[in-house]
Image (cartoon, rainbow, N blue to C red; front, side, top):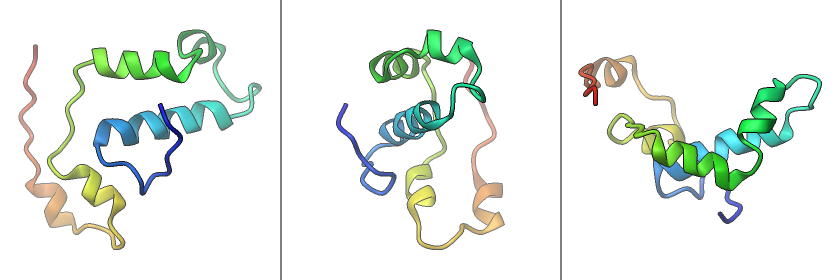
Length: 86
């Protein structure tokens, strides 16, 4: 996976992988749970776990996260609450 910044992501999954890996790799080992280091040993493994996890995100969430102004409370109240359980 190429190195991107949070505003370069074109897909919510790319953004989540970037964000998670950035947090994992920049957190000092004394503050990070050692299990994370074993389970998410590489960015490729993290990407595989996220891909296999069948995660779903709110519509237009990436646009909201990348927006220059905070979203209104009304936007968040309008999001679907139904969760499709597999």
